[in-house]
Length: 129
Image (cartoon, one colour):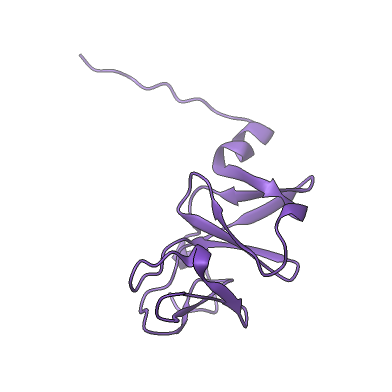
């Protein structure tokens, strides 16, 4: 017997909420802070007034980047010092050779939301792919 899955079309705000996860209020994350996003393999970083969401593990040795630090618009791995660009996830300093996945971040009504799926690398311009 074959089962058919019924597709449900979400409209407006329901569609948007299905693709994003609420993380915290904007005021709860301080400049320079790195926070793990519950339910996703992502860390949320605040550099000045900007928020960035990147993969939570270093691509070199799988170190947890939540224990890293922000240096010159980069997230530095606590284990071997690899640096990843916050805006695109590219490697800025080795020993890592692969970049991090990058997720979109939205602030709506004072709440911070992170996209469930990473940005597609083919859509980025001006950086290494």
